[in-house]
Image (tube, rainbow, N blue to C red):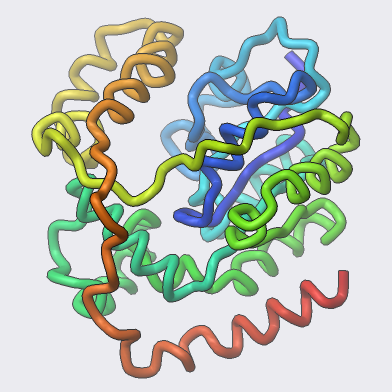
Length: 287
């Protein structure tokens, strides 16, 4: 198949699920059968080569844009070189969100999915951040993931800035149609296409069954690897893309009201992000 030419690389909890669902509507865009393909981040999958990566796509698709997404590509330091080796003409889509809001939302998401087993709250998670970065546990590095300029700079050492479409989750919420029109122009596809943007995806929710969530999503689950080893690759992709996704959607129970922050911004948090945000703004203004 032709090589993938577009990636959504981040940021986590910044509206990428909604953007992915909207983009899938366009006839000129073909996404991988599984939303998040971890090929460029996870060593054990990257070592399997391009054929493994391409197994997540429909090889018969004629759409000019072939895309996949994984929000933890943005903070992963080894991804840019790997992507460059795969396709030096790759284009990138990045949604950004106010870093403190994003960190808190990410922490709540990790707790909901049973990933956070050490920190009692976001403030407590700070003491685990360095260790988790070293272990590449990006689902749990709530604060570091919000240093957008640092991560984008790493990518822009490999790719020109013109290869990146940068927007904010606020833009997506306020005027998704305008953002999608700009994105189509960036991808050089029909920008007159009318998207259905009425539905918002992956919003704050509780869960119906903690047991089901733990079986499907927790990182130490023994259920998924055992089943996976018994199944052919294409069947595993089908189960992940169709059955698991539907079970997870069913297990979400919309929150009765928006859950408020459980703690105030941490002491020094403004300073933690201040310089990175200043440099990011300079980058955006220079475009």
